[in-house]
Amino acid sequence: MAVDTAENKGRSESIHMVRKGIATGFPIMLGYLPIAITYGVLAKQSGMTLTELTLMSVMVFAGASQFMGANMIAVGAGAIEIIIATFVLNFRHFVMSLSFMNRLRSIGLNWKAPLSLGLTDETFAVSALHPKEAKMEKGALFYTALILTAYFSWIFGSFLGGILGEVIPERLSQSMGIALYAMFIGLLVPSVKKELKVGLIAIIAMLINTLCIQLGMSTGWAIVLGTILGGASGIYLLKEERR
Image 1: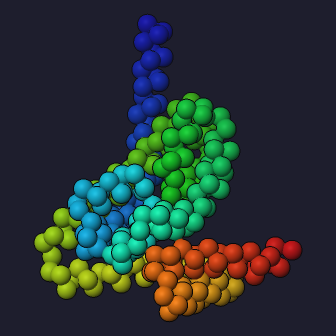
Image 2: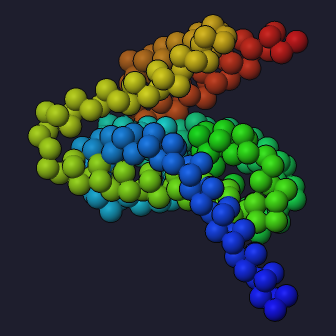
Image 3: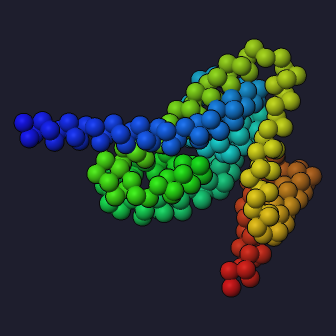
């Protein structure tokens, strides 16, 4: 009898944590769906098949990198160029994963390792607002439900966008290309408000990219070089602020 009571209590706690994780991830889902749909449309427009663009969401799960990857595919960039560019762009995920795993010390590595693969800027930020769940017995289920809610909404939105990319007028789908620039501007503006030198770094990267293209370099390698050198300039420009 006591065993049954304990099992029921544990099951109830697990269900509670899963529901709480889904509810916490719901706002992320609402934000992801329109962006994922836009990605799906643009990826389809760039020449990717519905299977390819959906698998990219399944295996990559990184909005900025997927937008950039779709854009680089559209301009004919090679696989190595795309891999290097997305690696540099997503390098911050190493830092986020270490911070996330450190915050979840009481949760076993068998949970933390796969959960870290589902981190995005949004899931990382939201999970940071709920540190107490990491100390609860079924806390791992909370973070799992949170991340999976965001993950599956991104995949579904990508798939839906790919379908819409096949049926909506070409002129309309081309106009959605502005979403790529809007997204990066949206990511850049808050950082520029905090530190104007971040804007200068972005300008340097843009100028390097433009100069490389003018010198005859392929668009893909121009993006890679602009990203790396622009980021490297930030080490020098922001060094004084850290002191």
